[in-house]
Length: 463
View 1: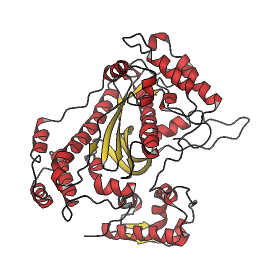
View 2 (view 1 turned 90 degrees about the vertical axis):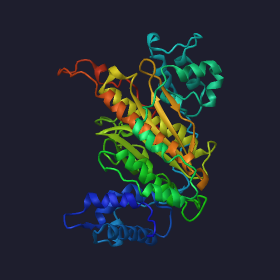
View 3 (view 1 turned 120 degrees about the vertical axis):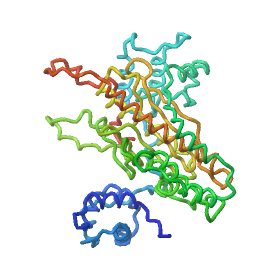
View 4 (view 1 turned 30 degrees about the vertical axis):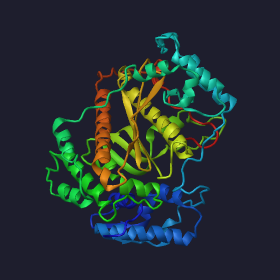
């Protein structure tokens, strides 16, 4: 078995992009493609050793792919801005917790709530107005919270101070989003794996002997390959050993079925520190031509472990945390409860701009992976065009031993398939629109997003 290479998929993808017809690739071109990833991973180690590590990765991946690496000296890294990161990537990328709001920032948010017309507010059966309670929390808060992005997650414990349990259940259940069902033939195929396997080898052989048309039966082929890869993890050990794996290790060793489900290109999965265009637009909303002050530097979008697109539109994302991350850790709080929903909000804003009429039927999808657990996160706008709601599935666990291979892994495949179908469904909804009339814009409100972007920090680094 060949040695696993960290960031192998990202390097391979870059090689395919920049190689010529003779299957030759310049080292400097790979570096240019992976510049953000290489810079972000630098932890202050000896510079020559760090560059050498990446050079060896390039050579190994290129050789395995049958490509020739040219001009791969460490000089090709000289264009990078390598500075020591205070926190290693393998520990956490979320260094922006406890962001204290400036008075001016809080005022902008409160003004957003105050500008919501009474007719557009969400009134519960008890008479309590959701928008007003959210505005109150926005005013009460000292630190940034999703409420400042007009996001309501009824599972967030803070809301127990503003709503009764019955009201929170009403918020959850009102026009609750529905996940697409699994076709009967695919469900039957999944059920064929629902057995008490005596060993990982038995499951491996069973799955490996299945044959499916790579085009007409793509989903069954994906299930089969996922089963083979999962059982391989237990072939030589009855228990899963992560050995302090990094986030990238987890994504490519344990969770590859997440992005491989999208290999049919109906929807695309883009792993490897991808920047969200939707978040970039949100952060640069006020950027324009300079007058008195120098033009501000363009902000980049949030870096995502996996970015999901249908055609050219962003419909979802995946965030990955290490095995030792729990729901009480900063990584989960920052990435799972702040970064992920804010990114889903910005993606939703762009979808709504394309079809405002369908705002209450659209949704965006997130996969939140923390160690061996995964949640599916859905964002929708159930009422009017201001408040977005978070709905989650229960946490599903990756099998940790041979005895739970089928009972734990099959729900993860079902969750992944239904999340993918939800993205495709949302894309079809977005495209269900009338032809636009071509006319000059004479009303400024026509160029204002009908669903405001998420809160953007005016000082410090944005999440």
